[in-house]
Length: 419
Image (cartoon, rainbow, N blue to C red; front, side, top):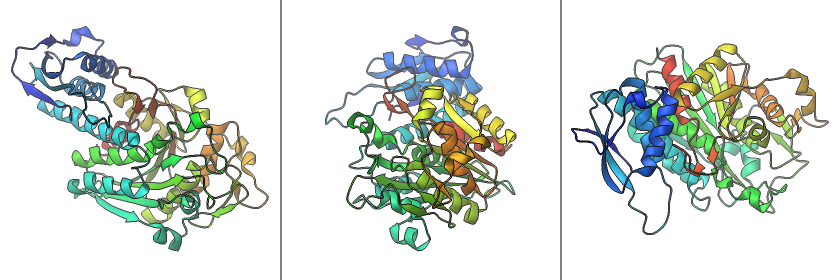
């Protein structure tokens, strides 16, 4: 992996704080562009005047700008390691590296082709990356899901030869802040054909990244555990492949979720909310969280509303919304709050179930309203990252493909709860 180290001069390139606005987001982007222009092999960069939050952001940008995902047999050697000259804030460098490496892992998970990335494979990666950090990983298989009433996850995954999973990752540090338990839920659709309501071919091309929400919550937990943040956190990833097959769930089916609520399936391509519903209901009933946050590449409507750089935020409390927006701004992963408008509740009505799963426009809002009854009245936020989870081209610290959006944001949010 591309690495950044402290060293003594002389630098080949000099960067001074006066060269930028001092805004950490600007520094990340500038460092990302610089990383793309570095020659192959080791390099030295002078960073006199950079320290603290700005230095950490600069390190994040360097690592993320240098990121490339490739499965070619003879990969290009690329730049690195980079030595930072004139820097005396090792803690800031380490903080930046920890956040960037978590995001790199989220990108790798998202970019891995679906032929490899089964739900079981995703659980294995979580165990390998998080186990040594003191995170407990439990992999729930289809038998457990059936015995415990996870009808949504089973319905979405029933058409695939790769059975679904619920990945449960728990961080319970000694000395954790009393009375605080954050549950993060990430959509884990390892590939989405659309099911019986099959997508067009060009619409499927990026669907191996449809588990970006799941990747982000696992990566956030890696950053949290790596920093030994004294806050209890559980990450839940309902993982399934939405395949097109004879055994696939169908329009007109009624799914019974964890806890008993039912959903009429009117569109099998609105599958993300079906698996999230099970995980949210399970979290609310069994995990005793003080706050619930879910993250998902959920609706194309959010891409239309906010574009490809900003995530949509729905929240049941103003304080939770403000905390997440603040964390997103600090991490360079911006959110824009959207309304949970009760006027649209009527669009979810079904004649044969508690709700149907595809009420249409306004798609982002109605998707959030579909999820709300599964949260048990807890403080809850839903982050729709359909736009910023994927990049169409290299730009600054973004590389084409999965971006890891949300991992640093969620880690920042949890860190703020420890203060």
